[in-house]
Length: 155
Ligand code: FES
Ligand code: FES
Image (cartoon, rainbow, N blue to C red; front, side, top):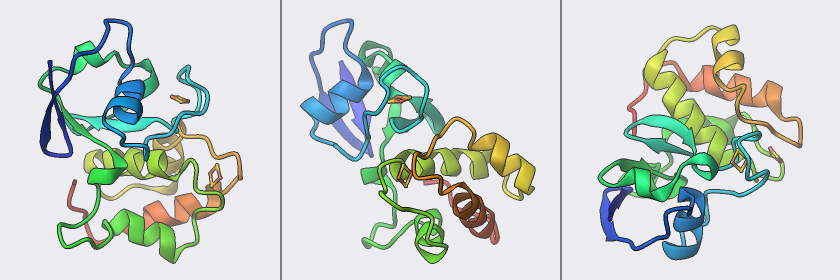
């Protein structure tokens, strides 16, 4: 099958039961997508599939033939600069260990693509599928709200 990851095309042969998370990390060596629970509970493995956030640990690779996949490695400006949401996370000190951060960033990109001017309640609801064991939630919410203005490019 052909996977399109961060704009690059890859011919991949994977067994029918293989998850996209395994394919990204172990075949394509894109290790920014994290494995934590492996069963759809934490959001650390979040990627964008045709612009919509999804848990890659619950997504079969065979279902992604021809889908445009975005991982954290594909987020950011072409000149190597940070995406506005990444910059807001830095500005508002919204990471501690950083393990959940790639998934948080991708979930936020999806959220602000759908709701460009969210309320705090929108952000809390929209980010509720991404857990942070360090408990950085107040700063994550602040960063996402700050990134919402002005409107974002959806990477
Ligand atoms: S690793 Fe996929 S939701 Fe936790
Ligand atoms: S910053 Fe450590 S899990 Fe979120």
